[in-house]
Image 1 (cartoon, one colour):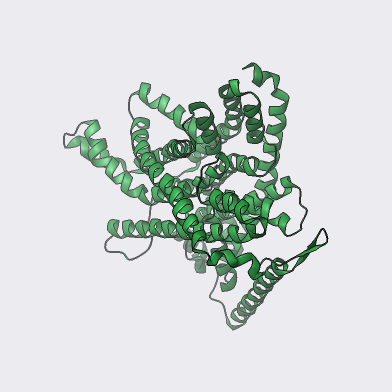
Image 2 (tube, each protein chain N blue to C red):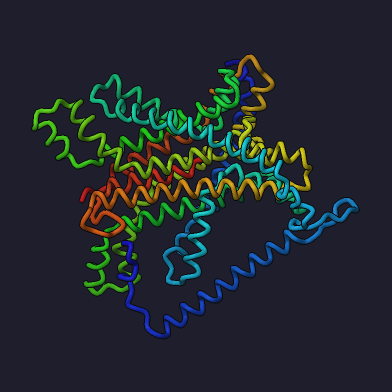
Length: 216
Length: 306
């Protein structure tokens, strides 16, 4: 326990980097994922194809492999990128198809009768999407999206593990190597900081789910 | 909402032409990007006065003709990955079944500690769990990877199964109780089998995640596919082959995961057909929103790789 308290500044520093990774790559994934989702439902066949293939490939690739590409292969090509930036990009790219799937499943969850009813009342495309479909899709989308972000918070540890970025996991590993006699306390300290992010988000998702799900 | 064509009128000739043009333009743009990427990879570059050959230069790829190379990659790398994934998958499903039953127990003393336990395991990166088991339990890398994956995915499968139990129509339980079954009988004989079937595609998809997660063994030093290719063979053949080795690992992972994903999807379709034998449609007509959400959530959690 003493080791944890003595190294609290290090922990907090690592925690800050973890939050930074979560924030920046989360934002990136949200933007990329929205684009992918829009491409997947667009009337243009090529865009749909591209988005589908992209989703399939990324979803079936381990994150470790993506991060290794960003931190090992890209420097081989002569690009000098700071490791944290590689981490941002790898995490954003890896998370984006999952964001897209969450958005798409929310839209798919709205029964088709809703759209038919809106159209038969004479609402146009934008009206029926904005007034009928989206408000219902929104509440189906948020809990899965929160779950994607919880996963992202945990995924940042991979960047620490292979990416030479000293975030929470990296700090924990360094400390565990330095203080072999207090490994349990050190790693529980690391786990505590992860839980501080993931557990409240998980509760939020469950609450929203409970509040918003309508039994038909 | 799967048929978005409801949302707008059928496109006329002009809209169709525009869509075709945009389709071609985006196709050409994609090809251009791919060509540019290949060119960047293929360009020889200067490094400290020496010219290194491009990434597709034959001198970087001659190892793939070596049978010894494939021998090591397949029989050490792929085998170790599959071995860890298989054992962990069996343990995870077993653990998930137990946890879901405990989690939905009517007895608070069982339900609440299980919920806390599941929450705890779900909230932690698997990587941290692997490191913990490796350093604290001192079991060696193989069991560190297997045990961490089993516990973590077991917690997730348990949650999915519980969501399946909750999403079942209440009439199932009421019917079972009214024909004289005890609550436990109803759970084991009526509710759980249905929940398991309903959630089977999600469970198999979770096993794809498990398979992907074995790659974290790279970080804790387990000799799986990624470590064998990028680390062992990387230092054996030299940095010159890193890109080749990465490509080999990428394609092997993609092959393994895609076949498992397709299996999951096939299972899902088969299950749907069984539930709705008369209808050919890919999805149940009016699934309850709770179940849809449970499925979406489970799919969202599958982005986890840590």
